[in-house]
Each structure stands twice: as structure tokens, then as C-alpha cells.
Image 1 (cartoon, rainbow over the protein chains, first blue to last red):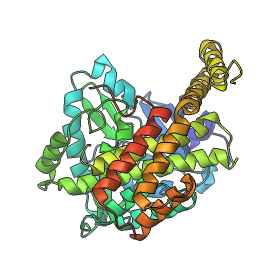
Image 2: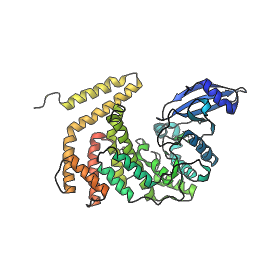
Image 3: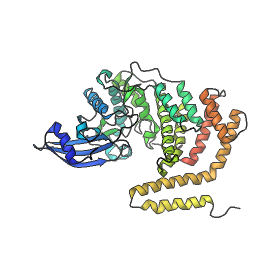
Image 4: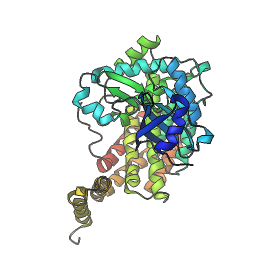
Length: 326
Length: 120
């Protein structure tokens, strides 16, 4: 696979914009499995396009392929969901791997800045409602307009995460208690299944001083229960130290009010509670996955080692959630 | 008799070295890792002080829940298995309260601020 260079990108971009000059190419960090590159493309008539390349060096487990993500972004944008306009899919002949190019939307995604910077003081109280109405928009996208996506229900996810937990052969009574509690409260299945973003949370919203500009990172999108997105959004991990349930920004009632206003349906509190519990359980297991990467020696790192002692944070959150404290 | 410095004091000394010296490294990644490493040593210090007592408390609670003696790892595994299989027949409210106590004690070692976040 060739290296990403201005020259290599110029010949790709030419398919849409004609001869161009690519400048300001830089790789941004963040996103472990994929690469994100920012660049500007200037056409002969001096029209400038500010673009992003998303590329997979290697296929990653559980995530959709880049072609699917490209089609998905195009479809949800047609349905009115705020996402960047996709422009070009990499072709095999480009020799650059699997990926696509989309418009670059400027703004801030870093949770701690969104939660604390003065620039967002005015918009902060409005973000919870915006998350609610954008979620409703996503969940209303006609499934027939989408590329083929996996169906992942509450039940299949419970089974999957139980199986992952079992790989570590470590007894965790608190996690077992959580699993049992969830098994007794699996929400009725959404029929038919709806589009679920899959990683709808503080960190994946591009925000400006006026509000949410777009929703990023669609690689975990699937079909299932829409309330999964609201539960994930409310997990404590995404509050970044600010003690408000919805990503550190606001309260559940504001989220549900906005969701109801946009969708016509008010999610049941007990279903939201179930999905926050499952999100928290996943977090606990993800901490185990990371720390065992260190323990078993695949990657030795003090950071990964330390994460093992964060399992109990999620156990604590899970037990409190069950006890009625969100 | 305990030799000085104690293991807690030795760990503390290394933690202070990380915080005061390594964390000032101009290499940002090194400084970040040093902060993580210092936090890890904070966990070790607290565990050296409270760990044995916590294990003792958890053990006694498990004995009370399960109704028989055993060592901590075995009792913990037995409870996990009993909950998974649905064989745990005791009172759920009591079980939840017990699990919360154990989690809270682990948090006091792993991340003492976590259970009492500052109000927003």
C-alpha cells in the first residue's frame, strides 16, 4: 500500500474536482484502528476544498468497512442528519487501501474543552436537547435507504459481552449481578430494527459556539434498538468528571423531552436505564480487555496496566444504577 | 520490626520522583506516562495500607452471604458462579448492598475521588 502523499491524493481528488493542488496535508491522532488525514485541495480556478481522508491500514474487528461507511454517511445525510458530505471512495487502483474522502467540518470535539471552555458557555445548556433531536433524526432514517448493516439487539449484545467477560476467567460478582439484572429487564425488541449510530457520545460531536455541527465516527453503526444510543450517551465514562448524566452537559429529562418532541415517542425510563447499564458493563469489560493486553504481554504498558484498576469504577456505577442512582 | 523506609515509604519516594522530576520532562508522552505511573504507585501505597483489611472485610461478607468458610478467591468465584447460574437464593437487596460495600472499598484504593465526585 502506498504512502499518503500530496501527489497520491491529487490524482484521487482529480476524479471529482479535476486537476488540483493538495496542500496542508497532516495526519491527526485519535482513532486507534484507522487513520485520519486533513488536507486542502485547490483547483485550477482557485476553488478550495477542505477535506478529510479516513483510511484503514488494516480491517478492524466489529467495525463496518469503509465502503459501507461511505454509503451510510451519504444516506443519513440525504435524510437530514448532520454529517459531513462524503466526496470520493478510494479505489483499488489508487493503491491507498480502503478509505474515503469527505468534507472537513471545523469545530471542537474534545470533551473537556466542550465541557469547560468559555467559548461554549452559551451553547452548553442547549447541547443535551440537540443530542436528543439528532438521535431521533438518526433513528428515523429509513432502513431501506441504508447499506446492509448487522443487526445487534440487546440480547445479542448481552450474549456477546458475557462471552468476552468469560475469556478472562476472573470472577466478578458485581458484573454478574449486573448481567443478571439486565437479563431480567431486556427491553422489548424494536420492530423493525432501526439505525443505531453505535458510538453516540461526547467526543463524537463536532461542536461550534452555535451548537452541534455534525456527528462523527459511524464505524460502529448497526441496526437495533434506538435507545442504545441514548444509553451510551449517558454512560458515566462520557461525563469526563462533570456530574451531569448526559455527557456532562445536562439531565435525562431534557434529553427525553427533545427526543420525544422530534420523534413523537418518549423512551421508557426503564429501557434507558437498561441501556446505560449495558454501556457501563461494556466499559468494565473493555477495561479488562485493555489490561489483559498488558498482562498477557501483547503490549507492555503502564497505562494499560493501570486501566485494570478502573474495572471497579464501572462496577460501582453499574451497582448504583441498579440501585437507582444515575 | 519493620525496616525503614517501609515498602510504603519506598513506593512513595518513587512516586514523588515521577511527579517532581520525570513529569517535568519536555517529552510530552514521557510526562504523561510518568503521571500514569505516579497514579499507579498511589494505588500501590493505598493497597499496602488498606489492602489486607479490605480483603478481610470482603472475606467475612462472603462467608456471611454463602454460609460457609473458604478462601477469598474461592468464595468470590463461588458467588460469581451462583449469580450467573441463578442459584444464588439469598436476598437481592442484601446482595446489592454487600457488592456496593466491596466496590466502595476497592475504589478507596483504586481511585478515592471516584465515589464522591465534586458537584457540577
